[in-house]
Image (cartoon, rainbow, N blue to C red; front, side, top):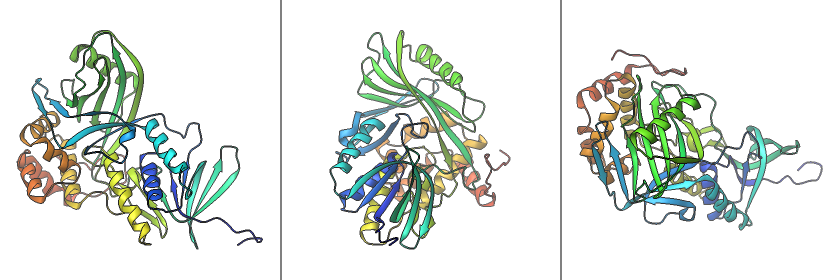
Length: 402
């Protein structure tokens, strides 16, 4: 109470309107929790429309926002060899942030326990009743939001101490071809028929939307991103010389950088302040996939809030993180050849099992079998080295001999 006026305290305040924030707000409202979602106002802090992909069995919670899906997946080796499979019951799905945001906003608007606030967040700090979020509205007015707890999805500044840090960086074109060039039933997860960088690996990525439309991306796993001009040059080469698409129109483009690291992201920064999404370590280190993880994380967080003990559980199991740390290190040191490694892994492991492993749903026995289908010598050498490497808070990986 202050001056006889009661200050509003929500059950939960969720900071950030990206995939993690929207998923959590949607799940909390579905469980009857009072929630305020804080999103950046229109302007430079509001990201451009982007694409999220994941695999899932059956019909998911956000099926209305899925703009395309594929039953068959394909990997192409550097020599053009093809690995193609139907990973049933899993399907690969694409969600665009625009339709996804509209879907969740409609659900929030229909709930008496939810509200959406457009404001720029400057600080989140603990308070006697939970936590406070200090903001500025689009009109420049200071605003303080109060909650029993706060879940913050804003990107962290810098990377926590780590032994290995690679970047998955990419640029994609939504293209329209003059004649049918794509099979809408098959998505290319990795196409290694592109020039490889001196460090790391590169591949094409093709998600057909129609016989004459697709999202075509050029992706690298390496230590530094490229310029937009360099990405466009790589995409021109890939679409013209490798895919041989002929005349095409680029309708729009998207570009991004995803850290791939063995850093440990703190999931709690105060008694009532938590981090979610990529800020809380939800990105799978070896793949960069995040969307499916934040869905699982949101379900677990909402259940903890409902029990009266808010928490954010580890987004990935210890075994998965340990195996990812070894793979990242082996790729970064050049001990394994990236294109060959991934092509052979998809060739030798049933795709449905491999996707379940990448989603954290495999058994220890299945993981042991997958490990035997990797270059065992280099991987064991890397695993033996890792415990003796220091975690550093620099932008580079810990150096070691090959």
